[in-house]
Length: 118
Image 1 (cartoon, rainbow, N blue to C red):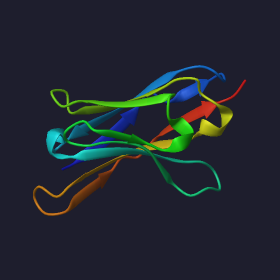
Image 2 (tube, helix red, strand yellow):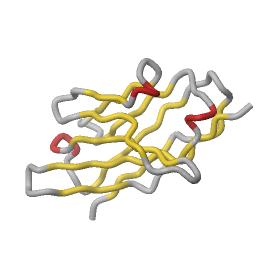
Image 3 (spheres, rainbow, N blue to C red):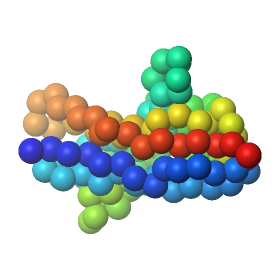
Image 4 (cartoon, one colour):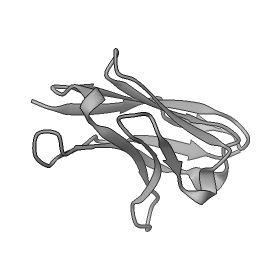
């Protein structure tokens, strides 16, 4: 059974930092591209950062220069380092993994809450 488990969320003041982790079990993460998404109350879910199997990265404009996505496939873990956090970054952050290596397979985690507030 496949699980993606996010952790590292919490309450932080504006300008602060958090590091989110997404630990995968039941799959070999190295075969998967992973995207961190976020969903704020009343808003649509949006992709924030993507890392490919070759560790190429892509970011939505609003987080460029502040967020960094990385992977440690030896630990089946994908990270999202978030710096200079803003109140508008408040959302549930979810991990999404996808591959075409064995046919199309996609998986979602349950999410971790990030709240940026003074």
